[in-house]
Length: 253
Image 1 (spheres, rainbow, N blue to C red):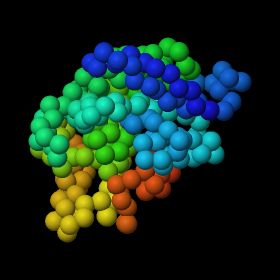
Image 2: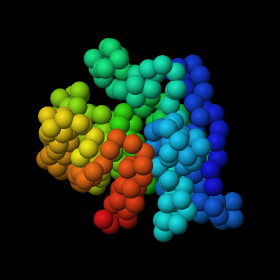
Image 3: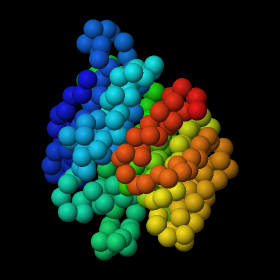
């Protein structure tokens, strides 16, 4: 079942909606559950909520999946370029002009406000091994940033079609700089049809492989997946849901 509620985001001075998936028998047991935090929560569960009319279909997947879990989907701002700003931890000379990212503030909110609230108000396993994070595009960048910078909180991350091309140097530096537990699992994926030109596709391949290699040398556990024919859209990200959920949480491909 899905619960939706507003939660105050101090950096913006306004509420953000949380889309919370709970196992259907949540109210009939006293069981506790691991939690996966995910960006762009409105795109996860229902087509009717999704920005472009197509969700990741995660509710249908989770309803039949063998592991019971809570997924906390965090909705972004839909005003102007605010999503790019809030989901970017660095400065970016973007396609819409310069972006001074506030992604670190977004992560501080998730770690210091959202997670403690979820752990206090719902039956979770709050420890690191039971806490993951995920997202796509700018949300994928944020998931990668989170598992590097906040590795004491998140043990696993799904980084799908991550927007990392403009900040590879910063991310590689963060990997080298930050302590990361060897049990950390990072799913890194991109689609072969996401970057139209041959040069764009070569850059995407190189960027993702470079992050994968740096994580591997760090001693953690990356898994790299290039989706043949994959585009930058929810319909193709939906196809990856079983792959990254099974690998991150069940240690199975």
